[in-house]
Image (cartoon, rainbow, N blue to C red):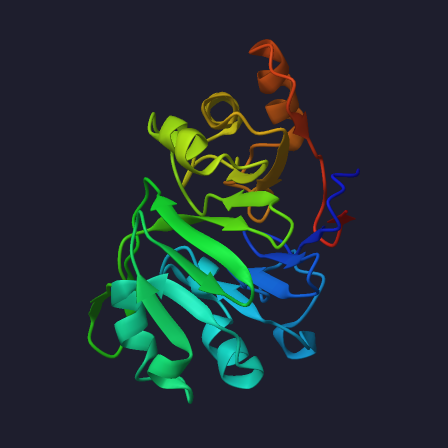
Length: 242
């Protein structure tokens, strides 16, 4: 399963993904490495130059704070999340950069743009007996050093303005949730592929629990039914494509 462009991408289960860039940077998306499908523990992660968390649900925030405290990556994130993190990380506001949807920042030698996601974002805050709000959900388009563009959609339903992500940011590859129940299913994800116009698709957020029943094979069928030429990479946790 090859995409080329001097880039390797490893699925760490659920929505957690590691990208190694042409400039030898390590990017972690949504690092819940305690997920039941993860091939790697958080303690064994030895590098992270750039950390991106799409929203504040525990199955996406996961081990991010502990990893950030230990490995000291750059962490651009939505504004409200940055306010919370600045009080919890040793590097504080020097390590975290708050921005918002439609914005682009440069971090660890790559360009990171924040885009819309259609989902929720609150999680349980046991000490206060209420929900903890860490900003709206988002997706990220990351332009690597060689111009290759990766879109991690986070958790989302399909939405028509994915066509705007195509027109504005022109991603080459999309990581899309397909499990259903909490996010779009394979049929909806195939429409997302069409709206985005990407050449490669990496399905995420499936198979972790029985409720996340969508499969890459179903996505492949739905993409083919739409007459699209995008390649759906049917990977499993621990697999790397490059």
